[in-house]
Image (cartoon, rainbow, N blue to C red):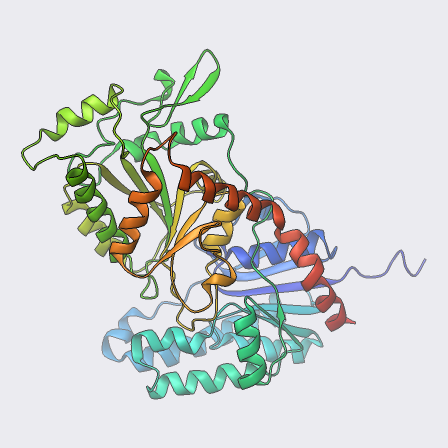
Amino acid sequence: MAEATERRKRAAVVVLGDIGRSPRMQYHSLSLANQASMEVDIVANGGSDPHLSLRENPSIHIHEMKTVQLTGISKISGALALLLKAVVQFILLVWFLCFKIPRPDVFVVQNPPSVPTLAAVKLASWLRGAKFIVDWHNFGYTLLGLSHGRSHIIVKIYFWFEKHFGRMADGAFCVTKAMQHELAQNWGIRATVLYDQSPDFFHPASLMEKHGLFSRLGNSICSAMGNADCISVEEVGEHMNTTAFTSNIDGEVFLKPNRPALVVSSTSWTPDEDFSILLEAALMYDRRVAAALGEDDSMDEEQLWIDIKNGKQFVYPRLLFIITGKGPDRKKYEDQIKRLKLRRVALRTMWLASEDYPLLLGSADLGVSLHTSSSGLDLPMKVVDMFGCGLPVCAASFSCIEELVKVNKNGLLFSTSSELADELMMLFKGFPEECNALKSLKEGAMKSASSSKWSTEWETNALPLVNQVIG
């Protein structure tokens, strides 16, 4: 009888940020609910909707905090605004963690941001008699160092805070072996490596799923951001049963042989992802293809696009880049995109529903990651999601990226826009049928997709630590 009435264990997942843009913490929440059989309270800022599987899970309860904005004070003093913002966030976090949610057995907190999150969670765990696990995605002080420089006094104070309160946790996860080594050697923190893996809803899309997605996105895909381009000439619509990529004939979906190649990149539009590399590579691809085909500047581009739309094929395809994400530099780069005049390349920026993003990855031909890591010790979650959909990746090179991207097996690395343009030329030559290098990388990405999923990784590496911490 005592066992039957025993209180169900409870976890609080803490994100000082938009939960809809924190996929790893969403996956933690799902695993705590489904695999650890716990009630889960998510305390986070609003902004974007989390995945439907979270919103519909009866064991997961989302508590949305208001985002703190001090724009008036920041115009007078940036340092004062940062300090006041941290104080207000600390009070708000403590209020939610101590009074707004039921008492948890364990707090699982995302880091970064470290200030004031780690102190607030430590205080709440002490007051409520709960345990405290930090999930190290990166180091907050290195991100702050991008804008202030590592030697700045604010960055040094942040580093002390992050290290001091990080060491107070009862357990820790981290995302790479390189980060695990750094935490052990220089921070005195013993962390369990929990590699990012995509959940089951990331998978290669079926032809019907592709057609449905491209039909829903038809207007966004075929509306040029600035000058008319090689995609905006497409005539699509649900009533026509055709998209830029697919046709539905008598209920059977086909991929068009003269379709553009679809390249997807997800970015946070922040300084640790130099989007200008992708723009320059797109421009280089456009010019190099024209040179390889012996075309000159006087060519009638609109006639070329009409010929391609009517079925004419070339050894190099049109490329459509779809860039997803939100962030501070988005408008700056959108303004640059609008001024471009390209012959065989088109670019679109979008923010997709959480259910459509996996479908887009599962429908694409290549993924591009511009993430370089402020610490050099974390890995881009977007690449994990791409591999989960069987999508090969060209990724910016940095110190530990080869823990994830296996060169010439599931992807390629680049350091400059010229190298990326070379890779686009090599991979898409002969698209869609004769591009053997791309097909080989896709096979490798499919193997990466089938080798492990988040639920397996979490049960093997995270669940034992959670059980050990809560005893």
